Image 1 (cartoon, helix red, strand yellow):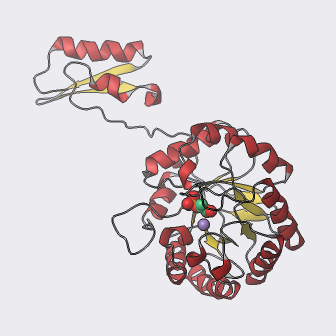
Image 2 (cartoon, helix red, strand yellow):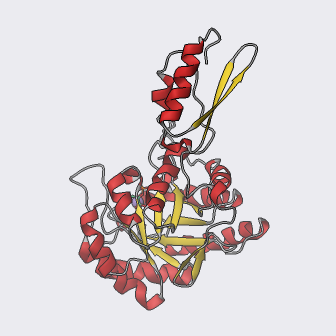
Image 3 (spheres, rainbow, N blue to C red):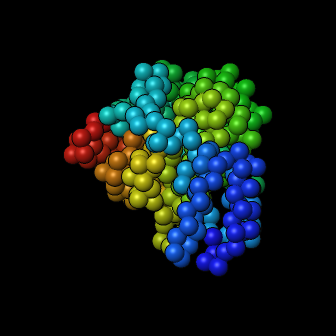
Length: 334
Ligand code: PEP
Ligand code: MN
């Protein structure tokens, strides 16, 4: 409360808390009176207390997210996807092209992913493009091509869902991991729908989302009953123009402290340049990431999307070797 507060103001806050079903603990100091709200404060609107007479500041003590908070589960969440664990000791690398283009491109990509020793494959059938005139993805036909390419190698498939109207197609084609892209991190209706399924979800960080906003989005999915959530840091908007986005490496240990969910990193969309991908991948693993989501194309110069950030199959294989060394140095396996 303000330093010159009246008893009426204090009573006003106390009554408001009681009307919300909370108890008030009033502590009168020499300079300040502090009112502690006792009970589940998550349902309170901070602003409605802030606007009461005599209130100087309202501070939340409890985190706004619940299920995904480390407080509610000390043990790391480990997600089993067709026998491959994400969030355990083993670091998982999810590799593949930015977008599904043709069957032969996907077949070659799947072979490259498997030969490099990766256990998951990525590829977008629905693409969120800045320009409406750019290639928008192959759609449902792309899901079929993806499945056909990945199945002979037993690679679980990771692909982006942009629109709830295609959720049934994702279920029909047995998509193993649904990716919610950066642009949809706060598409709350989409989050609610994937929350009703039990399919693991990779939730990418919004272009300029705070960690708290990101975790609240994860909470939307968890609140629906789906706790199989993987957070993916993919770089945030910054003032720097030398690379596509700025990889927030600090987010990795902070998230590990704040949540029990697995955290992976997409170095490709963070930097936008092939030559930078190995450095960022190794930094991510050193900082404690549980996995990497990386773009690889059988022939990057022919890629229909994000050609300048795709690794070749050979580069992916080399990177796997380099990452293995880092993983072992930090007590993990690859
Ligand atoms: C992608 O991974 O294909 C993608 C579009 O990434 P982001 O949502 O991070 O931009
Ligand atoms: Mn891409």
